[in-house]
Amino acid sequence: MGDVLVFAEYQHEHFPKSTLVAINAGLEMARKRGVQCVVAVLGEKVEALAQTAAKYGAAKVIALEHPALKNYLADAHAQALANLVKSLGAEYVMATATARGKDLMPRLAARLDAPMASDIITINDDGTVIRPMYAGNGMALVEMDGPVKVITVRSTAFDAAAESPNPSPVEKVAAAIDQASLKMEFVTFNEIKSDRPQLTEAKIVISGGRGLKSGENFKTVLEPLVDVVGAAMGASRAAVDAGFVPNDLQVGQTGKVVAPDLYIAVGISGAIQHLAGMKDSKVIVAINKDEEAPIFSVADYGLVADLFKAVPEMAEEVRKLKQA
Image 1 (cartoon, one colour):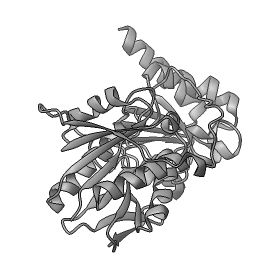
Image 2: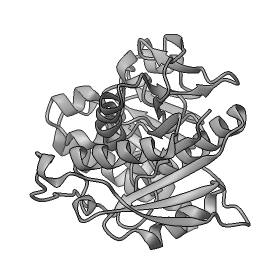
Image 3: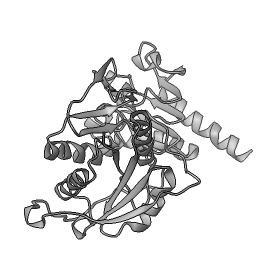
């Protein structure tokens, strides 16, 4: 029986909460299977980052280094990770189901000729896992057969790994990569920068839907509430498809999955695609003029009102409370 290997994704020399979720899921799998959890940090010079990852309870952290890993490229990372899996004899390889995890792990599974379970939410004692299907309306029990199993973890399904008083040992390893076989080339990374919290990291998310009617209304009606509350801004697929906001704000089955402490849905009807991405939020507030809107079925608090009147009033009341 092999160990559990966790791919630790990072951004700007920082491990987001989603990575700590994957580490915690890896630790849980290792406990239930009676093996060790090993964390891999890939990059050009990542020993310092590996030292940070060593705080979260793994048996060992590997700093897997190579110049070809300086920037994320799926073929280089998949090749390096596949060779590491083979050298370690790992049985499970896990990552968070982020955009990068969804890009990398299927390629890894193909290289290893291994079965894969995506977006899992539960780990059973026997190594089987549970994943949602049909936007969460069904649950699949997945049993994988083979020497290696590849898994991505839903970022809202597990708690983030807590810091351990005893740091893990860090091992620096040169990645095995055949550079002549690489077909991808890093050109540039265009990042949308914002002073607001990241959508998947925020404790409060306020999302707008088609009911806002235009991108201008997102700016004049929704953004003042978002900013005064200190929230991240999201959107429904309908609002994104209509061109009101960019698609990096999309919350839902084909967007980002979030589970903040507070989720406020403004002018969102609550199609199943959207509910799949936010229904695990701790408290859900819905504002919609249609009292029959499906969003009210999952909301803890519902306000049947004209959002163009209600949202500015809410923003003003929050301002008064902050000034008091």
